[in-house]
Image (cartoon, rainbow, N blue to C red):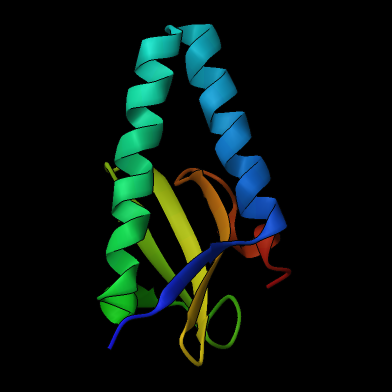
Length: 100
């Protein structure tokens, strides 16, 4: 069974911010390469949406997945749709992101 993966508005902003930061601190090619790897990682949720860890401590139904040891992807599954809610650095206060 295949799922749809969608970016929520905040996750879309997170992606843009991540790309801009990398482009500024490194260069455009590095930012593009990182973005491509991140998108491929997100695409794996189409077939394996429950691969992330449950994060009911932050919000009921929330799951998280680590990307390249530094970024955390937060998402939820509703029916056949995986919605990416946030993509943030792992050092961020995760409880504050979800009001927990």
